[in-house]
Structures are given as structure tokens and as C-alpha cells.
Length: 411
Image (cartoon, rainbow, N blue to C red; front, side):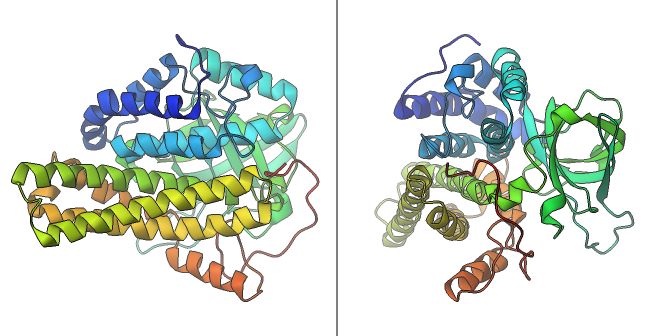
């Protein structure tokens, strides 16, 4: 690391924006074509002192998070997504891990793991994916089994959508003592563990043949196989069930929206360049599409600001409620913005190496991380006073659990 990590929110956003414009955007096409992790981008972020935005200041980070600078944190993600949505997704996971470590890890764990991020540029990921329903043609079933043993835990089985495969040094594994499903696909709240896995362990193996998606190719989200992988007890983060009982996923859902927004801004940037190059600024239909894009983007910023302000004011219930709405609205506004850009630019905008072509594929793929129908239904259930799942929008919602007994995201 060669520069001081500290700075004002606006300065930090400008620094990361300069890197995104000057370096990352030019690399995005290659990473996409090769389905390769954006390793050079992460190295540049490390050298710039920007790789630990959510680590505590006293441990060398920027100190951004739910208590201070949350909107700035999301704008850093947005600027990366403006250049490369796959890069932003990898960064999201890395940053969300820092938020969890800052809140749930003990002091010894924090010193150990943040030193690796700040001092050596170690990359983190969070892996939960264990979908239990099979799709047509799927033969193998995904899932892990975890059992306590002397000194720790043994993890056996598979996960998919393991972002950062073969590049991340550490992964927070969301695994459940009561069976497969991870966090999203299991109703066993109190059995959920967060285990920090050293990915240098040879019992952790990757299958790249599983990963050939239409978009977000640079996230390198392979199938990962654990063969009786031992996780020491000192690598357990927080208490069993704490992640869900304290509602941490609800803090991260709007963060996905920041990536949607960045991709939409990238699409709008391209459309504006096209309009100027084609001298179409006088076309009234083009003017309407430009206005629609601008209103979408402005509205998205306002909603992210509102959610961040609620978290920082420690109004957690309102923040979670607003976050669900923001997650739904930002998907709608981002996809509409890309649609407006496509209709403005025409078919040539969908021919490589047009960045609009890549943004269209990346956004189309990434918004399916959650089911927008279930997100909207969750909002309706909340309004009607019904039980609802504010974490993963499952229907029927997961059963309620006991009271939280650790540090909450709003504290």
C-alpha cells in the first residue's frame, strides 16, 4: 500500500472513479471475454489504499459502514460498476465481509484478518449458494454438511456461485449445522454458521466447467467442493444464527442496488456519447429517452441516500423496510435505463466491443440474484402486517427465531 487510506467521502469517490475511468473500464472487455477475475484492478485498489474501505480506521481501513459513511461506501461500489459490473460484484463481497468482520469478529480475529487485507492485499468473498431445487438436466445436488469436531468444524459438500474462485484468499462460508441450503435456502435460522475458510487449503477444490454464464463472467463464480475441510473453532465469526437474527442481509441488499445503478450509469454514459457522435440531440424522442434515464438515475441516488441515512441514524426497522423498496426500485430503474440506452443507440450498441452490450448482459444476469416478484410481494406482506422475510424474500417466510443477543447492524 503506497498511499494513506483516509480522506473525505467526496475525495474517496473521486479517487476510485479516476481509477475506474483510467484503468478498469479498459480492462473490462478482456476480463469478460476470458471470464477472468479482475486481479489487476484489485492490485491497483490495494496500491491506492482503497482495498479496506470497511475496516476500522485504527486497523488501517477507511472506517466506512452502517454507522458512518455508508452512502460513500455504496458510491465507491457504484463507480466501479460504472466501469465493470463484474468487478463491482467481486468488490461488494469483499467489502461486505469487512462489514461483518468489523461488527461480529472478536478483536484478535480483526487484527489477524484486517492485517492481511491492509498489509498484503488479501481478497475476501462470502459464499452461501446451495440451491436445493434442481433445474432441468441437473444431475448433482448442491449443498454442504458441517459437523463439529474437536477443535473446530468439518465442512463437506459443494457450493455454487462462489465469486472470486481461485483468487480470493479467504471466504466466509455460510453453512448450516442442520443441513444443506446455506443462508438463503434453509429455514434453520439458529444453525447458520459463519466460518472463515483459508482457501489455500488443498481440500478446497474448484470446478470451472460449471461457470459459463451470459453475464458477470469476470466474477469467476465457480462450483466449489469441500472435501472434509477443517475450519478451526477460532475461525467462527459471531454466534450461530446471529447473521439472520440480527438482519445483516438486509443491510447488504441495497448494496446490490449500487451495482445496478453503476451499470445503468455506464449505459447512460455510452448513450450520451452516441447521441453527440450522431448529432441526435435535437430529436424529441431522443430527448425523452435522455430525460427518462436521468430521472431513473436521480431517483436511484435519492433512495440509496435515504436508506444509508436511516442506517446511520440507527433507525434499523425503517432502514430494513426502505432497503427492500430500494432493492426493488433500483432494479426496475436500472433495467429501464439500459433499455432506454439500447433503443437510443440501436443494434450497433449490442455488438462487441460496445460496453453497452456487456452492461446489458451483466445487468440481466445479476438482477436475478433475487426474485423481484418475491421482493415486491415481501413489500406487500409488510404493508399488510404479515410475516415476511426481509433477508432473502422467501415465501413462505422463514420461521421467526429468538431475540438477537449480539451486536446489531444498527448499533
